[in-house]
Length: 331
Image 1 (cartoon, rainbow, N blue to C red):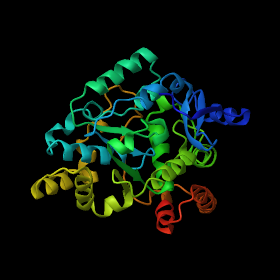
Image 2 (image 1 turned 120 degrees about the vertical axis):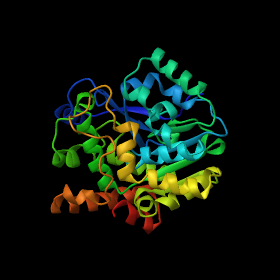
Image 3 (image 1 turned 90 degrees about the vertical axis):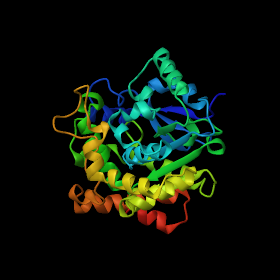
Image 4 (image 1 turned 180 degrees about the vertical axis):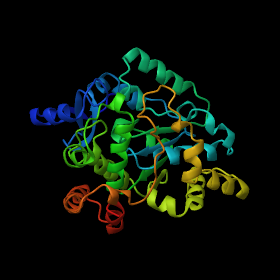
């Protein structure tokens, strides 16, 4: 099957901004937008994705797959690890094993710029993984298998957009050797994230993903979580996930997993905080802070006001009528 979305090239001025802020040959080079059949924006990827798109769209699904789908830097890894443990009888000692080996991150084949042959090999490995699989992606549903929602349990995770921006900036800085970002936060928050001029599309993709989620609210296979609520009641998050995916673990296991996945504990134990390739900024961590409201330490007063106006404008375009969702986006 062929997907029905389309690719759109960046404009000349947009290309200039990308070249101004990103250097090298990483995923932020040769960007292209994806729009749906109505011309509505979905996400930004690199040119390499064009020859790999069928691998994502036609991936073989299993009824016992559980998918974690989020915008970047919204608590994906935390949710992914928690869900994997629920699905695998809370084997906490296995947290030292690379998470992406236990739970595939599909988007890596495009982020790493794999050629078609290597990408096909990687998807073959995904297909060979034993059941049940915990699968992660930052792509909206339109790029993924069309029967995904009707076949698998899906967990969406959101976070207030200002904190997501801050976390993405630090993520790009951490992986400067690969991502190629050469900008300060003020420029990132003005010229990159809200314009979507980076891989994964920053703010515009955040709101596109939000619309995608709430268009499907009420579907029996859909669970929508918010990072801020998960931080407030972590045990409740574990229970909510296990109930949604219909797994039984004991009260003792729930307590053990809750304690283990407290941010300060998981930060120390996570395989994601081990830079085996030596590509990270010295002293940096993938699991960094996890603080709700850290944006206040990065945004100036005027910048925050400008963003508040932009948030309302973008939110109104989603058609979501629930004011509580808007309050979570701008918390």
